[in-house]
Image (cartoon, rainbow, N blue to C red; front, side, top):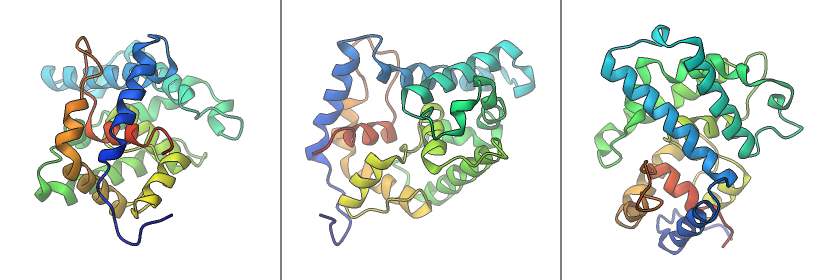
Length: 227
């Protein structure tokens, strides 16, 4: 049943995060950990570039190759190499231009978004949408779906949900926009702010976790299982 107005309370879904973490903690080679590997290496690469004043041209071919491999395997783990996808017929190097786009300095603000600062929402939302369109252009003449584009951004910036069928059904059930557009991104920012106290208690998978899960990934995990 779809609600008549937006429902931003997802407190009853927070336990899905623990269930998601358990799949990884119980099996260190579980496919769900592919997101961690991909997100971690892109984050490290970005912050090292920023710290050292490096440009994309300063990265070696091996650096780019490793980023492409991690992105490709993460996407495979998350269902993006199924038979109907153009990626099924491509090797991992098809992601090279997308990787270079993701690391452009004009998107630096997407690596550490201040979701608490509502005044910057419109600027950040425009950046997210612009990045998605530029990433989409990297795969021409193929036409990436919004599911693929948003999963790429989830695995790198960690700034948006992966808009697959599961996510869209959950968003619709909450009375939220189910298509990837600026209105939907705005609603997700509001969703985080409404639930941030609970969500922020779940940022670390375990005591030895080397990364903090970003807000949009936490929300994504809330929608991981059916009610």
